[in-house]
Every structure is written in C-alpha cells, then in structure tokens.
Image (cartoon, rainbow, N blue to C red; front, side, top):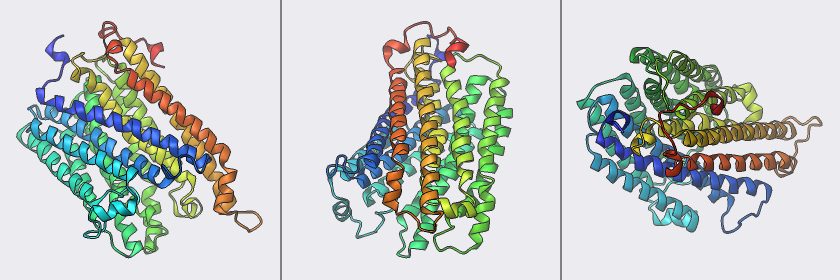
Length: 477
C-alpha cells in the first residue's frame, strides 16, 4: 500500500478512538430510543427500573455527546491535513479523550443508578444550580469537565491552524468550534425567572444546532467534497462562505421562533417568523453545493459509500432541518403545533440528517485510511455500508412521517376540536397508539441499518477484495 493511500500525518490517527467511541455511544442512543418508543406504548415497560424521564435523559445526552466526539474526531483528522502540519499535541488529544469519555460514562451511570435529586445533592448543585433543564441535565462537575475539554481541544487545533496553512475549511471549522464552546457557557446560567431561563437556555440549544453546528457541518462537508471530487478548492470555498453567511443570518435571529410563548416581547413573533423562513436556505444551498461538486468531479474516488453519505446528508438535512422545521415555525402555525409530536418529527430527521450523517460521512471517508486499508474499503464492505445507509435513512423518513401524522392528529384532537371541547392529553395519546407502534417498528428498522453499518467495519469485509475496483452503479442504489 502506497503512502498516498494512508493518512498524511501520523497525528491524524488520534481521530480513530474518537470515531470509535462516538459510534459506541450512537448504539446506546438508539437502544434507549427504542426503550422510550416501547414506553410510549406500554406505559410501565421497565418501570421502576428505568423510568421514562431517565431513559429520555440518557437518550438525548448520548445524542449530544456522541456528536461532540464525532466533531472532535473530524477536527483532529482534517485540521492537520488542511494546515499541512502535524497536530500541535497528540498527547493532549488523547488525554482529553479519556477525560471526556470518563466523564460521559460516569454521568450516564449516575443518571441510571442514582435518583436525580440525589445526584444533584452529591455533585454540588447547591453551590451553582445548573441541573434540571432539558438537554442540560448534566451535573456541575460534568459541565465543568466539558468546558475544560473544550478549552484544551480548541487550544490544540487552534495552535495547529495558527502554525500552519490557513484555509477556508479550517477557518469556518474553528469559528464553529469556538462558538460551540462559548455558547455552552450559558449552561451555567440558571435564573429563577422561568422566562429569562428559557430565553438564555435557547442560546445553548438553538444556537448550537441551528447556528454554530451548521458551520461545523459545512466545513466537514467541504473537506470531504474536496477530497472525493478533486474540484478546485477555490470553487468549494466560495460555496462554503455563502452557506456560512446564510446559516448565521438566519440562525441567530431565527432563535426568535422559540420565544413565541415564553413571555418574551411580542416583537419576537415577527422576528422569529421572518428569519425562520430563511433557515431552510443554507440547507438548500448545501444540496446545490454537494450535487454540483459531485457532477463537476475530476476524479472517480473509489470510496463510493463516502460519496453517498455526503449526498444523503445534504438531502436529509434540507428535509429535516429545512422543510420540517419550516412546517411549524411560523407563529400563527406554531400557536397550534407547539409541543406536539410534529416537533419530535422535525427533531429526529434534522439531527439525523444534518449531524449524525455528516459524522458518518467523515467516518466513512477517514476510517479506511486510519485503519491502513487505503482510500476505500472493499466493495463488499461498501455494499454493506450502503445497506446501512439506506435502512437507516428510509427508517428515519418513516419515523418522521409517523410522528408527523401523530402530531397532526394530536393538534386536531387537543387544540382545534370541532365541538369546542378539547380532548385530554392522555385520552389523545390513546388515539395515537397506531402511530407509536409504527414509529417503534421503523425504529427497529433503523437499528438493523445501524448494525449493517457497523458490520461494514469488520476486518474480513474491509479487506475482502481489491479496494481499487470501483463499486458498480447498480450496487449503490
């Protein structure tokens, strides 16, 4: 195997444990999601061993943490190559890996085996109350650990960029990573006033997923497209800057669509609605960008699975974050849909399409090199990976459709009843059981797809045949 088919810099190999651990956490997230899906149908399933609120905390926290591990692995892989120098400190990268992994595992074990009030008491929540808020349930020591890891991580990749070549990919990626770290600091601010709490809580939650995470996604996508298409870097960088501008313009003021019903001034009804209509634009431009670059490619990259993930990412992100977000983001519509299953439908497809898939895109591209296989795994491994892609993606489409159906019926029964008497919440849930069963079945299909995806990494499949032989078009799907 020639050196051209392996990693360019030895320090890029620190990305491998980050990718592996991210995928392990991804499996855990899906398993807890299936448990929650059954608890929607069988209310006392695993109760009191695993109450719904605990399963939900684990499910959502695993989502956030595995994506962060994926982003960090992606940065450690692409930043040295973009900067054209070794990573500033591979030892620091590995130290931070073990700190973050240890803190994450201990936090999840705390959720599972310690009552949440007791966990708050033993972790110093009385000193600085930060717990008890959705997605930010982490104990104080975990939040402090996240800040320490983030600072060390940004220092490591930042020094690499400063000492090396400056590219648009690295600049956009660093902007997103610094924004991610700074915005997390609002997790430590927990005012007693509920309206004020939610106002700043969305600084973390919204401006992460609909702001700086989009910059990280765009940078990773641009890097992978440069590698697999051979298109001039200048062309891709122009597209990248357009995407970043649209993401920041729409995402920052688009935060206002979360302020409709929390006691904020009514001006947010207009600001939130107007700028939220622009939020699908960066994702639509990403679709044009990816397909344009694939069509203009100057080389046939042997890793067809990575190309499929890149194209699938932009399509699913546009549908989930763009289209499904827009469906219920205008204030006159959100008045009826707020808090319904339509929100869950949007959240599932958006997180999968925009962020889970971009992590799997860079993993698909980088792992063959990190494992010393070459530019691409064998055809058999790629076909298995594509089976995983289609099963997970189609299952997620059905999960989204079933939750959307449940949300429409929920709004119809609870918010706009024909006789003027709204049905109670629990009575409404009984009417949604068919949708919940179908959602659970689709969730099982997603798990099967994830298993296929993980099986594609087996050593036997990865080296089954000549990796230079291209995958046939009819095998891609």
